[in-house]
Length: 213
Ligand SMILES: [Zn+2]
Image (cartoon, rainbow, N blue to C red; front, side):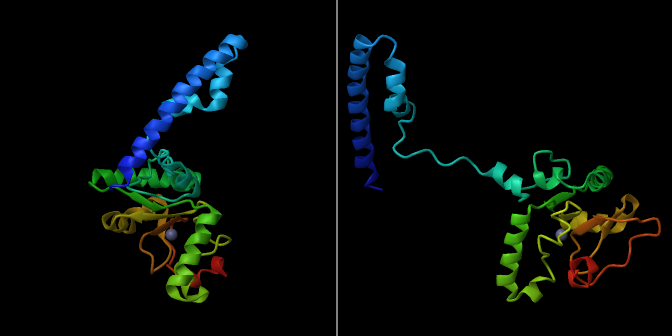
């Protein structure tokens, strides 16, 4: 990247001129108006020039927090992750059941990850839009992604778990904690149900779920 070297030295020269020039100016202001120097320096942005000598503005801060605010999940998030809105905004009973199950699953050497949990309406809408363009129509997309109005993820009542070993552990032991797979085509999607008589029969896919109508 040849063009960067001259750009950088130009910046240094400019910074030096600004620094020298403003030092003289601050001296002048200090002489004429007692106590005015810091304000004048701030207004001139002198301190900024000195504090950030990088040739380009610093990269924007990681948007981890914002992503969490929407319920997006990045990396390995467990049901115990208190910094992820996807986890903490789940329904309290669902989260308690998940943590109980995860504690026992850990004894079997299995970690239950949250691939998706609570979602903001905007995030759910983004998912729906992506699904419509992927599957070609709203009707086809409805087999996989609900609307913000109907999604149990938006209300905090559903969790998509990973990885495969956690899915199969939960399909085997989940009912003991009230955790049930709801849709035949989504082995990762669990919700809380009355399981005194075992988990209810699954719907083939979400389009058969009366809540989605
Ligand atoms: Zn789901």
